[in-house]
Image (tube, rainbow, N blue to C red):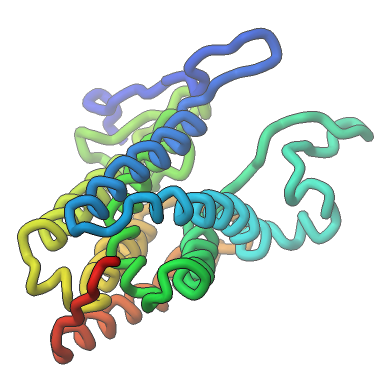
Length: 282
């Protein structure tokens, strides 16, 4: 395989370190995503005359749900065989090394688990705080989440993880840090670009297409299709994350994406076949 045109990638996953404490690009992207998301959602609420204080309450729910859901998603969908024997490692950033436990940080978060966690959190938030349908909140929240997804995939790139199978394309990456010798699809970049496009479209629907914004569920449906159909398709050229996926017609990421894509199609159909719903802000 010709690697002359390939891009050698050997970025450090650490931004900087102070003694035993290190700041990693992935964590920075994760945290920055929440900050950008908070700012974008606050502007959206102000734009439509909704009390922006609700954003502060919502983000308490969302941050906890994202972290817990993403962690449990990884544990249950990808690593239960291991974690069922190491329960203490599920929510503590440690691993058993040489007969003892060592701080290693959390080894795995799953986006589908995060999505399930967010939906549950928004349901609780809608019941306890807004007293409005869950889709009213999701139609707004998913807009910045698309941007957060792009930032997290950028963190995956800096970690040299979750990349694709071998390729002859001139933009293939040789991940030197992982001792790769052939070019692989930089699927993290593919997903980042698709998520940014989805974010742009959702912003357009919200700010420029009032007839669509007020059709409950349309923006959420567009988000589900834009994010999870992208994930489903790109998985075909992505290396399996876990050994148990070898030989599967569809890997775990694809199987978990299918319900979201179907839900997205239904939500758009339902939104376009029912009249807009308008809410009075108090």
